[in-house]
Image (cartoon, rainbow, N blue to C red; front, side, top):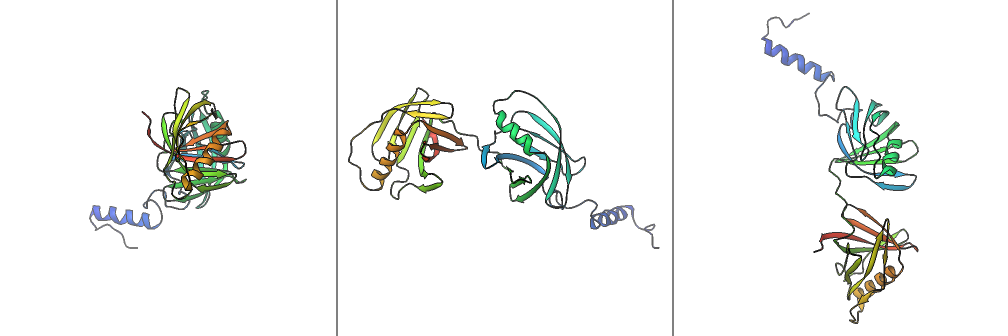
Length: 271
């Protein structure tokens, strides 16, 4: 058997490292080896539980180990946690919950759902900048390598209407009216803006997940075409108060009891 006795020490070390790498003992890029596709720090974007989507608090996060020990650390949104991780092939892990803090937090619905999903056998799909974990019954944890965009405040934000909703159908605002309808909900209980043609003002009360508009006071320009069509739809929607609202990042959704609604994007804060 040939030995490395007469070779320089530095060369022996280099050859030994190369042999170990070729046999799979080290080397490679973290997170690319089979069974380690989850490695890294991931910011939780949302959960899907029995068809319902829950938006994650900005602090919700999981850090998966690159190597040993295989213990994940994270935050449910307020409470921190640890969990043991066992890899099962290239697309599966088993999570064994460890310790966690027990503070009473604001969004306990999300925290409880996250803790319930992040346990047991999970499959995962990794795409550039995105990791999705799936439970055996089809519920999901969607995560991103990028920090989640903080939710814009519903008040003191200029909202631009981008689409109209009717049940499960979402359509862009009529051609020619894009960017015309804007509104702001004030912290003083008022709303103001433009319906697509005429300016308006009204009382508007935000109470938990609902916002109620009072009668609209508007300018009186005759509005036809796409802008007039958009204005009529928004007037009908606001009259159907109370509306359910939700904000995810920079997107606001308002939904009436009859399932009509709108989607709007955040602009600059109102002065």
